[in-house]
Image (cartoon, rainbow, N blue to C red):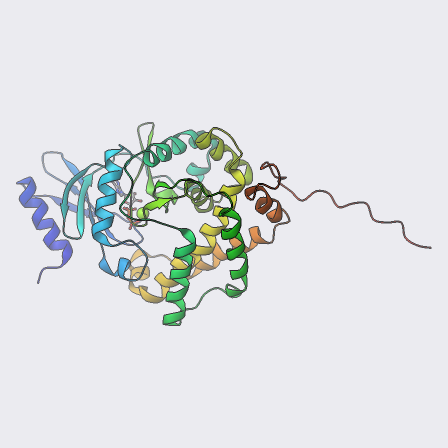
Length: 325
Ligand SMILES: Nc1ncnc2c1ncn2[C@@H]1O[C@H](COP(=O)(O)OP(=O)(O)O)[C@@H](O)[C@H]1O
Ligand SMILES: [Mg+2]
């Protein structure tokens, strides 16, 4: 029986009416991604979805990913969908550089990234819902069920996760169609416009999560969180909400890498990527932020108990009391 890749390629050739030259694109962490060239100069992108990714809880069902990819394309932010196949999709090839973390951190990029998010979020709603809290529970249940290792101390932080959810629920926003996995490699610069690919985790969600997730994946300093928040919302008030979602991104995607490492080990070998080390790194970042003295101020701000512009650093310690003689 031909494998999914061969049969997808056969169908693309039948659709195109001419041969294609496939070149595997490195960098995809989950699926098989190929650039297809024709001899007369056309170029497309074939994304062959691996059903094990969604079966392991690491992505939405394939048919819904294709629906969401098509809706994202309607906004002009996603790549145009040229052909949908069972478990595969042929896309417009976006001819430009894929971003990396330094590019996403570049202050000059904030406006373009915010604009791409705004356009995506103003588009048709997705066929799936997404909550980072439900995803965290789901991945943790998977780890427990399969006895997969999580970074030391992970379970000790679960009460903080519940507190963050409670604080964010005080003033829930309307949900919008979100990508939910905006690591730098899912942004492509198309001329001066930022485009977004890879709708594996897409679903309607709090837009502050989208921004917090971008910030987590590109390791933003608080100043850059403020800048991106301002570029997206027009003011910095939601920055506390974005920063709590930044923490949730790191806490939850820690488990994405734990599950990937435990259940899809051969992927790791193929991608040349150390999923276990990435899990440890993400968790260390979450712990850093949970233990930061400013964490309580973020919680108060999202609950509306104090102005959102929270201090960046802990206030200076009060002078020591005079020593008794
Ligand atoms: N439509 C596209 N046009 C050009 N390059 C693309 C396109 N889609 C993906 N890529 C490139 O392939 C890489 C991996 O694709 P992606 O869809 O993100 O796969 P994965 O789910 O495995 O991360 C991206 O980081 C980007 O460099
Ligand atoms: Mg990707």
